[in-house]
Image 1 (cartoon, rainbow, N blue to C red):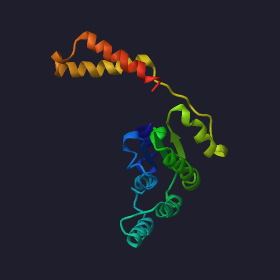
Image 2: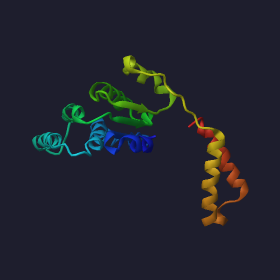
Image 3: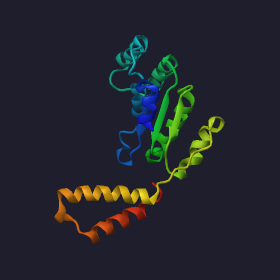
Image 4: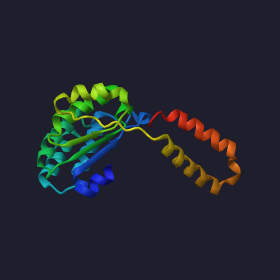
Length: 185
């Protein structure tokens, strides 16, 4: 999806993050919004950069949420054309950060188009924040045949390098265990 958006609209109009439950300590609202903003500011807008530098000089190295939101409010309206924000695995963010992120996306990123992926249990949270702006969600689940084909390919690549490490029974046990745990992901 991201590669397609970049090829169609250019890198300067696409920003994305990937949620990772193992990295919740670093996935703060300031870091996430800062990452999105940094990606959108790959273009040379000297007045935006001057404003960002000014905030950084005033505040030192420690940015707070209100600082990063000031930058977003200043920068987003000056971007040429539509911007696309892709948030993959939203459900893997800490619930408080997830809710803050949704509110900021809804209120501060203007006409940006937002693409969110996550497990079904967060649907009501997303819908409650984006009530007036929501479109019908697209439900995507992994085809178990595709999962099996991908895993088989990866195992066979590994077996070429380390043929003694696995037999057919172990290969089938691995495939069965992972496919049973996939649950549509």
